[in-house]
Length: 124
Image (cartoon, rainbow, N blue to C red; front, top):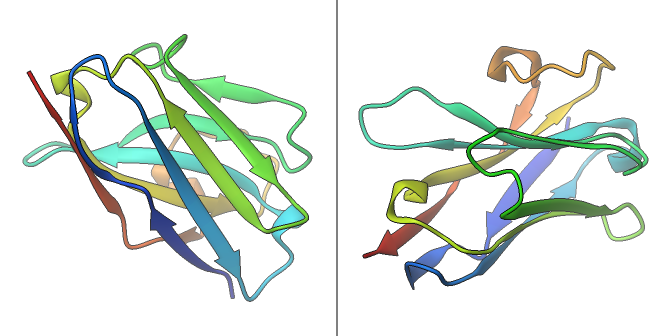
C-alpha cells in the first residue's frame, strides 16, 4: 500500500508560482505512474498532469499546458508539480495520485492511491 503526502500549497498572487511536492512511502514508487488532480469547491475532481513510471513522458490538461510542469525523482520517491503564471481559476485543492497500471488514464477512477490534498489559492 502506498501512502502519499502533498505539500507546498499556499496563497499566491495571480502571475506567481508555486511548487507542489508529493512524497510517497510504503511501496515501490517507480512502479507507479503518478498524476496530479485538482478539485475546486462544488466541482468534480479534474485531471491536471500525469507522468509515466520512468518520467520519460508527461501529459497535461489543456488548461495547464505551458504553465505547469510535472516531474519525478524516483530515487527520493517524490513527484512535483511546478506551477507558473498562476491564475485565480487555478484555485483548488491539489491531489497527487498513484496509478499501478499502464492505462495512461486521466480518469481519477484509474488511480489506486491518493494523498490528502493541499490547498492552492490564487488571488487576483
